[in-house]
Image (cartoon, rainbow, N blue to C red; front, side, top):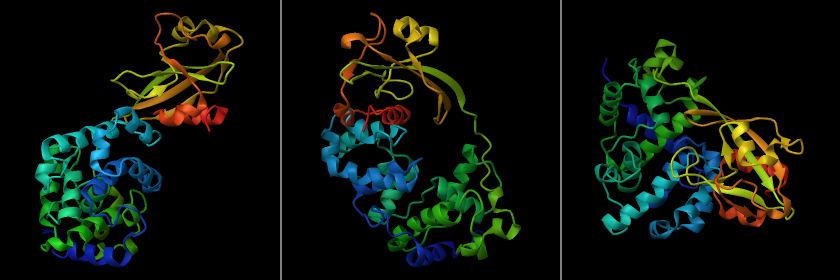
Length: 352
């Protein structure tokens, strides 16, 4: 069965009548702002991004400001948004555009995809929104919409099947370049509002008459994606040390691994290792908090936090253990903190 020839026209008409309008990045045609929103929206819901997006732009209003910034400052503004590798790649890419292209974004998806941290779908989104290029996107929402409309029964975890869907997505693009922003935004909106992972609202979908999955009565069967490894469980013991002045001991994490280069409570692989590094943690006076469970993409963390009070502000860790420094609460807004650590400190009153 051939792909529906009027799919693009249906999406464009629907988007212009019923698509989202209130999100701050939706009417943007500045490639810097479109790029920033696309990166933030990867693996993060739009309501959360709405808080971070204007705050980030106030500090880094253009590409040059971002490229000139220190990475720690970028990470601090990203703190709480999660998936910090995105912030590092964003910063690296800004510098690459300044160095390679004189601070001006390339105007084609192919050239944009050559930059660090800009994948094929993000490159196509920038090119479609800002330069009206006929380039197909295939983020998670759009992949679901097209897989259902076309009843793609192949496993999209396999590269050859995903490549085949890219080709069909390219063939479905509207012929008029001027329609590309509405079409691209429309697919995103359909995936976010109508063609949701569970219980899609087919009655309101403009693609219902041409949707093969709806016609078969099983839209939730698609997309097929079987290669989803379960997250690896990992337990960590974190030291929450404070002193008489209300300061908290923080250490910057290594450049590799989870929460790379973020400031955090020092962590250890076992309670024995924690007690060896900080003898106070093994005493009856130490406070052991209920475990905190936190999901990462490939890890299921169980965090065991132990609170101690250091005498006279002395370093709480034995010599040779991972070092850090005392930070007063007023200094924390300038630091990038892992989300569960930030929430813990807020709950304990150490962070406003």
